[in-house]
Length: 370
Image (cartoon, rainbow, N blue to C red):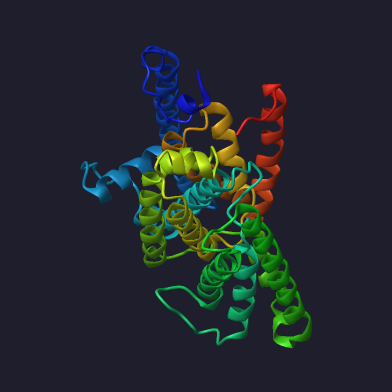
């Protein structure tokens, strides 16, 4: 099968229409989707039930079915269990799923746009902007709040978006945005902002007192505790993911190069700008809810691309489910690995994702083909 057909860009020939390989990719895609959906449901129930107070999975399912109005199961559990599930654990689990999906989709977008398997959600400098924004947030009044978010996540969100705007403007050359220029500008801006954050931490006495808080945020951790916060993140992630799915075919064309994409009728600059904005918004939303969590946006798209192929129309929904499931699992392990102390979830994503990724690459025994 040709690379065009594998990426979902069909050739109008009788041979390609008779080719049985696309059918096998379709079957593999549906199998992967249902497997990830089942895995996500199982991980959600486990994450909601495991903790200081253990709640049986059957009880959790009954509570959720009753609360959603899908069934009426006679109450046989204490009210405290329902409060723990609905008001304490479930908001965090849903937030972890949203953050994981956002990072994974953003990573897929940037890898497809930049045609670089090493790209991740922070590739254009959003990590440096988010870190500096969080540092500025620590300098503000502790009671600052907007839409249920404190100063640190709010200014991290704004810092990530502001960095995206600056990098994009600096990368424009003659009305175009070359990929290499975008990467170099993102790297330079991220380094500058990162060291600016370090400078502020050194010279400011107040920040030195909050070094532990800042360090924990930089390593990542789901900090969402209220449904109002979950709702705000959900709006951004769902809207961004929906728009990203609409750009799947454009990503397939862009992965072949700008000239090939233009030949296929893709408005390269407009779609490139849209991908950068969507990826940055998804990354900023993830940062506001979980800090700087690494590896999710790099590992999950890699893993799924090797298993299910490079067609972005299929890869993007798989990445959303895969990222959500992966981060829910990592967040659960971060809570129970060395209980009662909670590990930063970024450590778990590195410990789980890194070895698994290396094993998969080694097992494939072939050169990586983007």
